[in-house]
Length: 74
Image (cartoon, rainbow, N blue to C red; front, side, top):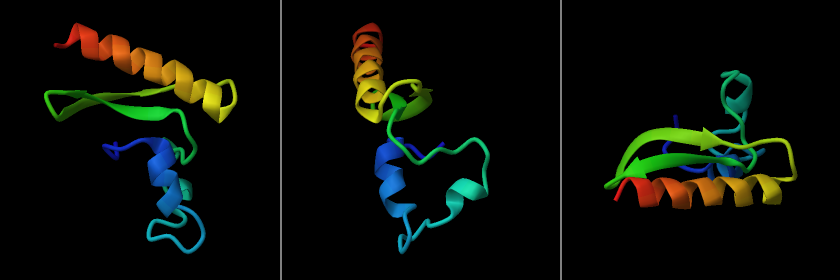
């Protein structure tokens, strides 16, 4: 939806950020790590969201998926 990672976007959604409060305006938006855009040749074609562990664990799983996706779409 935002064409950037949820962790990246979360930084500007904090108190004082330019997008503060956006997470309460859309029930499909999260502002903690684990979500990443899926891109093919620089174009965003979808996204992946991983949740259930710590942010570090979720991001590690998501990065593995991103690597596999990149291999499949070369």
